[in-house]
Length: 363
Image (tube, rainbow, N blue to C red; front, side, top):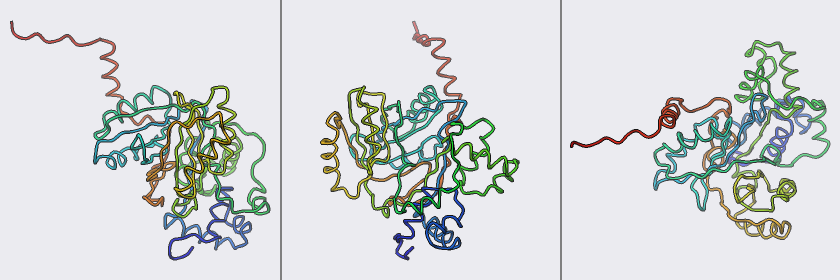
């Protein structure tokens, strides 16, 4: 890594290696990249210390519930946007938060336990937050693709084979169990903790930790992300595109969209605009060219709105600076209701008893 804060080819390969095998030991990573283990570890330490790259982990499926993913447009009062964003970014259920152009100030991606919790979050958290003037919520009926699949693609087949040589094979159970919660929390905190450390902190045996990790990874219950600062990634521009398509074509179109190099996220939505996808582009000048190519390749798809990202303030639970460098972590966690039950109880009581009688003035 150069002193100027840029990434050289080895840095790009290192990031790609950790995108491919996030828990691989440094000896294996070094062998794939043609360097020794200490060089690989030292490089990664430099990148993370400078906020230029980082790893994150989060659960995507649990056996005791089916989480709800929603995209919330947030309008802010003049001069209050950053105050609102700083407040919302601390919520552990907020996965992404971005300041964008167009018909909304902020886009928040939230993951909550059910529709009732989503209603409480929008009504009691955002609705009562000073500086928020309006919100609009869409539920993701299907999440076809998300950012953990995106790669810098700097490795050849031989290097990938070295990294994935002993990766658990087969189909594991797709969801975390209740007994996995403590282990999952530790991985969210730092997903490269060695097995011995995880065993010590959970009170489990190393053999049990390895078995549970293998089961969760085979089934896709845990998702890992290795990210790089956007200003250095070669793909610095984010564009959100809302679109409509015939309902019977959405799944097929989403599958094709998810396969595009530029696509980071693609979801079916609950509203009249029944698709939303986010793409990364190499420059702002590519926005119109990308949309033109999209129209030619996907004639059934009608783009209805668009927004360009100005500042990705939170990405997969990580707080970022305006250049996309990592500042700190707000551990992403979907299973704890962040809201007080007191306010909800007051509302339920009012709904149960009906409107209070109007007071009469003096006769």
